[in-house]
Image (tube, rainbow, N blue to C red; front, side, top):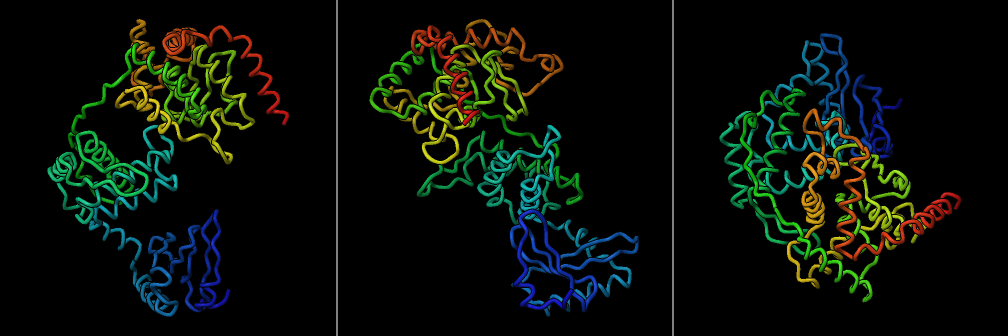
Length: 432
């Protein structure tokens, strides 16, 4: 290995799968590390008095030159000879970490899959994305510069009150995205994110104590919006009319499926054809918000999925207009449909609420409805609710009622024909 120079460091290339190291021949233990992102940092590697191998980051290349980093490395390595432990000393100094620094640590660790969530699995990317949004929009602007060790429970609850009052609200900016606002729901989710990340940091020794322990998260006024039977009937009429007028057929089909199944928006849009099991009236999701699930679907829903699936050779039931991905524009289609129908405050989640409401009106229990919606288990009894005949019957009856409201049950009269056509299309796709 050569002596590290500016030319050698600049010539080092990143490896997307692992860190790359280059060690100096002049100062043993001094080297440079290239992260998969391309960031280059100078480090030292040594053994402390307990004969444990430690690494210590000197600084980033570009901020430090090779010569300056080598001189700093010599000083740190000299302190090791005297019994020092630079890595442990830095860890002790972390008691003075700010909220922003702990948040950045959490996001880096969570995005790398090194932190486990409540289900003892790496935190989902979608959850980390939501956490990042709350951190950047609410937590950092209000208390990012505060030192964690100096915070008290009262400070956390004061932060919650400030977010609820709109102190971190921002005006709508140009381009995509909504307005950053306040409110009880926003405040509660932000504090839950902060409490969770501080507990991760405490558990792994990054901070001594979490000031959020014991915080009372504000109760939010959950939206109760759901479509009445008359609104569902009107929505179906408008959807047929707009389909004749050229509205996006994939978006309209996705809306129907969300109503007929109660599935979440991305569960519908990202659904792949091989997940559908028409003979068992179910969809086998390899991953959902609550993990892998077998979700019951009624005949009306299965028929709609089969009909949609045969319209393209894409592996997705709802393919994108171009490219190899899945359709993503259902919210815009739903907004146009509801504007034409004169229906306000209708989102994909409202369609899910509507499915649950109609299931309740048909006399199904809360436990059965929870199983149909794929909610995570909340008690011992629910652990024994699987995809059995009762759930399939419930899903079929709810879907049939919604289909009747939407279009008078026309799909049910075509069940056998469409099952056969779907089987043929799947076979053709597999052989293609």
